[in-house]
Image (cartoon, rainbow over all chains, first blue to last red):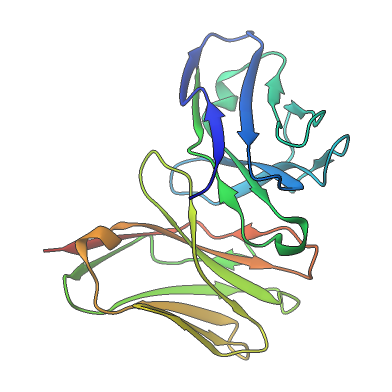
Length: 113
Length: 112
């Protein structure tokens, strides 16, 4: 069973607010990822990290930012939320040498009004 | 441009019968393919994978077939059970350090 946790599960927030989506894993995995998914659509990679102090942009451009100060923690921040940010955000992690076997958290469903 | 395509948004199958989920890809550099399963309000979970050097991989009721010449893979579930009802995502990786590219998913409904 995967030990990767995301909070909050659901978030409804007004336009212009700053939000941080939390993601933590207790498996000691090196790589961590943030995916964004809309209903019926692909999972799009928006950020990933190879380890502490490493952050990279994914395939889908995003206005969000991430940080990786500790191995186990990979938060995602939106400085000013907009309705176009409404989506499900999925955090994942993997061992570096098995980067195809991702363990996903339960996701955060974000709604920006 | 979609590199991994799941052209069937949904599939309905009777319990005990075979479920076949299909996936096509466009990039011949993909070397590893995976299937993930997702229940509502949960994150995807890894199901089964196959390397491009193989054409079949089996794990219990789940078998994945790869046809490289056709750039096509399929997931067979036999026999299908109601608990298999979920969204199934096909994913592909290019190179050992490549990130996964996902399809849009196929929603499988297994009816008792």
